[in-house]
Length: 238
Image 1 (tube, helix red, strand yellow):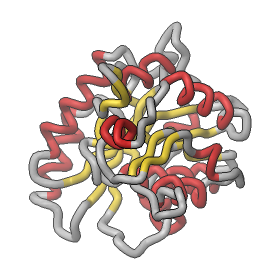
Image 2 (cartoon, rainbow, N blue to C red):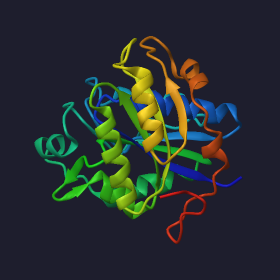
Image 3 (cartoon, helix red, strand yellow):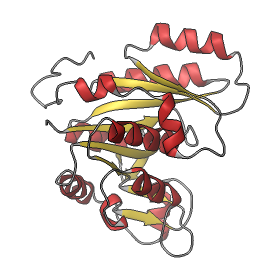
Image 4 (tube, rainbow, N blue to C red):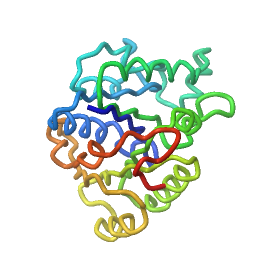
């Protein structure tokens, strides 16, 4: 079975990346895949060095691995990674992220790499998450947090992904409230403008676990897509 690796980004922080990523991991596991979540950079920990987002991906993964394989950097303050790293005297090294990804790929055939914040979140100096994703040549999944202003954020992110020469493999519409602003109109506008398949519409599920949320995403397009390689899009659309 071929291995597939996708990078999950969002329209903004709190767009629901972790919840949707965990749901997709569970959906892939139900389809018989050895799914693994990887969040290399995380901000905010519980006092014992554990980030709740990383822990959620660890729990949702089909393969049981230690926390340290699911994450490279966890910082105490829940703020922009480059600021949290500077405060702790740490330099986020993209080479370390690459080594972590290479290691996690040894254990599964469906890997979802969750970013931090949005597409252009800084990591260190003039390097941002998008630079690392482009260097790794990862296909991208976009989580759109449905709220006022999300159309612009979603379209700008999709455009930036394409400009980076990467394929947008799909997107998830995530309801951030029980009644998102003009839900049907916003969803229709996004579907008409985002050049990638809609993988699911996640309702507002504040108490749901990843196993329940998995029912609202369809990862079949991700599972059947040919692995993306640096020398071509292999069936993906820019």
